[in-house]
Length: 336
Image 1 (cartoon, rainbow, N blue to C red):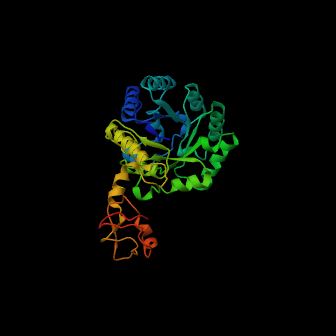
Image 2 (cartoon, rainbow, N blue to C red; image 1 turned 120 degrees about the vertical axis):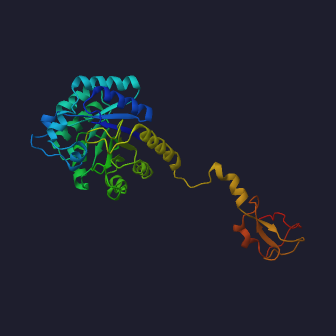
């Protein structure tokens, strides 16, 4: 099954619908399977005095979180336009709902999945509403787990299971909620921990600089990759710096598809591309000198030489001491 690659447009549209449309088009050109936005009402999401995270201050300047988010809201009409634009462009439209009203809006737009952001993993009322929506609309769930421990993941997952969602319908996204995320703290091995602990499909939401981490995550079993996309990293706004520009995003998708092909089916057996090399590189048991009928095979009259077109040297010890049933010329293959 191919990895689902989600282009996280997020708030990188800077509140500009035209820029949001361009992000959709860039996601399509880069080979993403889906493009995802963020749906929220700033006044409902944060208090007037809510501080910015350090990375937001560094990337977006001073000021309150409320004022920052107010500039990044998308109206219901803009949501409808983006969903329609995604349909026209042939890419799945996704968005993260940060409130009940936004969840209802997205359900009305035939959203293709329920995405739980890391910051909402302890928001029981919203989680319950998302679980009910996923169950009633038969939607898969992408549950991001940044900033959480196994107990918190288990508690959130349980709400979805209680709503009737099957484990195979939930993808747990490992995530490090830092922008950009330091490589030494990524802890990609947590992917295998999550899969073993909960029996769910796993994925990875990446905030590192570059494309190595997503590709490594696919090698470790991630079936969903989410990565921020921007048209220009130098644009003002909280997430642009930790995003990929279109050419970089396309390179990531190409690398992920290459990784998928390299992973194979896991069965250890000779592959078609190496069959010729196997015959050339391996050896066969041959006569080291003239051998006459009735002569015993020995270390003196047998040799193992390339190519591997005859009896395997793994049978060498079984031949020693046996009598030749016919004569052999030097270099001739010896029957096993």
